[in-house]
Length: 174
Image 1 (cartoon, rainbow, N blue to C red):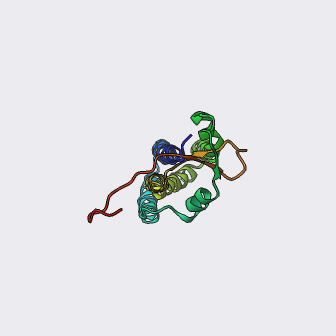
Image 2: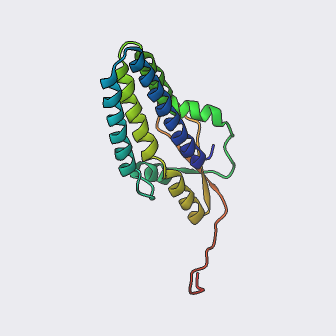
Image 3: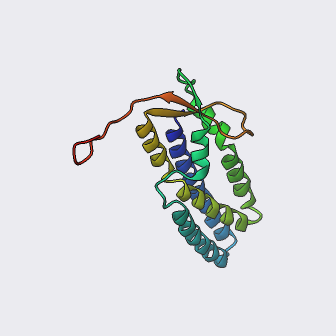
Protein backbone atom coordinates (compact mmCIF):
# COMPACT_ATOMS: atom_id res chain seq x y z
CA UNK A 1 0.00 0.00 0.00
CA UNK A 2 1.34 3.44 -0.87
CA UNK A 3 2.31 5.43 2.20
CA UNK A 4 0.34 8.45 0.96
CA UNK A 5 -2.81 6.32 0.75
CA UNK A 6 -2.09 4.88 4.18
CA UNK A 7 -1.89 8.39 5.67
CA UNK A 8 -5.16 9.42 3.99
CA UNK A 9 -6.85 6.27 5.24
CA UNK A 10 -5.56 6.91 8.76
CA UNK A 11 -7.09 10.39 8.79
CA UNK A 12 -10.43 9.18 7.42
CA UNK A 13 -10.62 6.21 9.80
CA UNK A 14 -9.68 8.40 12.78
CA UNK A 15 -12.38 10.90 11.85
CA UNK A 16 -14.84 8.04 11.45
CA UNK A 17 -13.87 6.68 14.87
CA UNK A 18 -14.34 10.14 16.39
CA UNK A 19 -17.77 10.46 14.79
CA UNK A 20 -18.84 7.00 15.95
CA UNK A 21 -17.61 7.55 19.49
CA UNK A 22 -19.27 10.98 19.58
CA UNK A 23 -22.62 9.49 18.58
CA UNK A 24 -22.23 6.72 21.18
CA UNK A 25 -21.40 9.33 23.85
CA UNK A 26 -24.44 11.44 23.04
CA UNK A 27 -26.71 8.37 22.99
CA UNK A 28 -25.32 7.11 26.31
CA UNK A 29 -25.70 10.55 27.90
CA UNK A 30 -29.22 10.84 26.49
CA UNK A 31 -30.14 7.45 27.94
CA UNK A 32 -29.11 8.63 31.42
CA UNK A 33 -30.46 12.18 30.84
CA UNK A 34 -27.07 13.67 31.68
CA UNK A 35 -27.10 17.11 30.04
CA UNK A 36 -23.96 18.23 31.86
CA UNK A 37 -22.00 15.36 30.30
CA UNK A 38 -23.08 16.40 26.81
CA UNK A 39 -22.00 20.01 27.32
CA UNK A 40 -18.68 19.10 28.98
CA UNK A 41 -17.91 16.62 26.18
CA UNK A 42 -18.91 19.14 23.51
CA UNK A 43 -16.53 21.67 25.09
CA UNK A 44 -13.73 19.07 25.13
CA UNK A 45 -14.43 18.24 21.49
CA UNK A 46 -14.17 21.91 20.50
CA UNK A 47 -10.90 22.19 22.45
CA UNK A 48 -9.67 18.96 20.81
CA UNK A 49 -10.52 20.36 17.38
CA UNK A 50 -8.52 23.50 18.18
CA UNK A 51 -5.55 21.43 19.40
CA UNK A 52 -5.67 19.16 16.34
CA UNK A 53 -5.94 22.12 13.99
CA UNK A 54 -2.97 23.79 15.71
CA UNK A 55 -0.85 20.62 15.56
CA UNK A 56 -1.74 19.91 11.93
CA UNK A 57 -1.29 23.39 10.51
CA UNK A 58 2.14 22.72 9.00
CA UNK A 59 2.27 21.50 5.42
CA UNK A 60 5.73 19.97 5.96
CA UNK A 61 6.30 16.41 7.09
CA UNK A 62 6.45 16.00 10.86
CA UNK A 63 9.71 14.72 12.37
CA UNK A 64 8.37 11.15 12.88
CA UNK A 65 7.22 10.98 9.24
CA UNK A 66 10.50 12.46 8.01
CA UNK A 67 12.43 9.87 10.04
CA UNK A 68 10.38 6.99 8.60
CA UNK A 69 10.90 8.35 5.07
CA UNK A 70 14.64 8.71 5.62
CA UNK A 71 14.90 5.14 6.94
CA UNK A 72 13.03 3.64 3.96
CA UNK A 73 14.84 0.80 2.20
CA UNK A 74 15.42 0.89 -1.56
CA UNK A 75 13.61 -1.71 -3.65
CA UNK A 76 13.54 -2.45 -7.37
CA UNK A 77 10.16 -4.22 -7.34
CA UNK A 78 6.83 -3.14 -5.94
CA UNK A 79 5.85 -4.79 -2.66
CA UNK A 80 2.74 -6.95 -2.56
CA UNK A 81 -0.47 -4.94 -2.68
CA UNK A 82 -2.65 -5.81 0.33
CA UNK A 83 -4.20 -2.57 1.61
CA UNK A 84 -6.73 -4.24 3.92
CA UNK A 85 -4.15 -6.26 5.80
CA UNK A 86 -1.77 -3.28 5.99
CA UNK A 87 -4.49 -1.08 7.49
CA UNK A 88 -5.50 -3.69 10.07
CA UNK A 89 -1.86 -4.50 10.80
CA UNK A 90 -0.89 -0.86 11.41
CA UNK A 91 -4.14 0.67 12.75
CA UNK A 92 -5.17 -2.05 15.20
CA UNK A 93 -4.62 0.31 18.19
CA UNK A 94 -7.26 2.65 16.76
CA UNK A 95 -9.69 -0.24 16.36
CA UNK A 96 -9.04 -1.61 19.85
CA UNK A 97 -9.35 1.80 21.52
CA UNK A 98 -12.57 2.52 19.66
CA UNK A 99 -14.14 -0.82 20.64
CA UNK A 100 -13.05 -0.51 24.29
CA UNK A 101 -14.16 3.13 24.59
CA UNK A 102 -17.45 2.36 22.84
CA UNK A 103 -18.05 -0.58 25.17
CA UNK A 104 -17.36 1.55 28.23
CA UNK A 105 -20.12 3.95 27.16
CA UNK A 106 -22.64 1.64 28.82
CA UNK A 107 -21.00 2.07 32.22
CA UNK A 108 -18.93 5.26 31.98
CA UNK A 109 -19.89 7.46 29.00
CA UNK A 110 -17.30 10.05 30.06
CA UNK A 111 -14.51 7.75 28.86
CA UNK A 112 -16.09 7.58 25.43
CA UNK A 113 -16.35 11.36 25.33
CA UNK A 114 -12.66 11.74 26.18
CA UNK A 115 -11.67 9.13 23.58
CA UNK A 116 -13.69 11.04 20.99
CA UNK A 117 -11.60 14.15 21.64
CA UNK A 118 -8.35 12.25 21.18
CA UNK A 119 -9.59 10.78 17.88
CA UNK A 120 -10.46 14.31 16.74
CA UNK A 121 -6.96 15.52 17.64
CA UNK A 122 -5.36 12.60 15.80
CA UNK A 123 -7.41 13.09 12.63
CA UNK A 124 -6.80 16.84 12.45
CA UNK A 125 -3.12 16.64 13.38
CA UNK A 126 -2.33 14.20 10.53
CA UNK A 127 -4.57 15.75 7.87
CA UNK A 128 -1.78 17.41 5.82
CA UNK A 129 0.87 14.70 6.05
CA UNK A 130 -0.20 12.89 2.88
CA UNK A 131 0.38 16.10 0.90
CA UNK A 132 3.82 16.55 2.43
CA UNK A 133 4.80 12.98 1.52
CA UNK A 134 3.37 13.37 -1.99
CA UNK A 135 5.47 16.52 -2.47
CA UNK A 136 8.61 14.65 -1.39
CA UNK A 137 7.75 11.79 -3.76
CA UNK A 138 7.29 14.24 -6.65
CA UNK A 139 10.48 16.11 -5.87
CA UNK A 140 12.67 13.02 -5.50
CA UNK A 141 11.03 10.85 -8.14
CA UNK A 142 10.27 7.99 -5.75
CA UNK A 143 7.22 6.26 -4.32
CA UNK A 144 7.01 5.07 -0.72
CA UNK A 145 5.16 1.88 0.22
CA UNK A 146 4.32 0.45 3.63
CA UNK A 147 6.25 -2.75 4.18
CA UNK A 148 4.56 -5.68 5.84
CA UNK A 149 5.92 -6.00 9.40
CA UNK A 150 4.78 -7.26 12.77
CA UNK A 151 1.86 -5.27 14.21
CA UNK A 152 3.90 -4.39 17.29
CA UNK A 153 7.04 -3.25 15.45
CA UNK A 154 7.48 0.31 14.13
CA UNK A 155 6.27 1.00 10.61
CA UNK A 156 8.83 0.49 7.84
CA UNK A 157 8.74 1.85 4.32
CA UNK A 158 10.13 0.74 0.99
CA UNK A 159 11.29 3.33 -1.58
CA UNK A 160 10.77 2.45 -5.24
CA UNK A 161 11.66 4.44 -8.34
CA UNK A 162 8.86 6.69 -9.49
CA UNK A 163 8.43 9.57 -11.88
CA UNK A 164 10.27 12.79 -11.24
CA UNK A 165 8.48 15.92 -12.29
CA UNK A 166 10.45 18.78 -13.75
CA UNK A 167 8.76 22.09 -13.04
CA UNK A 168 10.15 25.07 -14.94
CA UNK A 169 10.75 28.22 -12.94
CA UNK A 170 9.27 31.58 -13.82
CA UNK A 171 12.49 32.84 -15.38
CA UNK A 172 12.88 29.79 -17.68
CA UNK A 173 15.77 28.09 -15.89
CA UNK A 174 15.48 24.75 -14.14
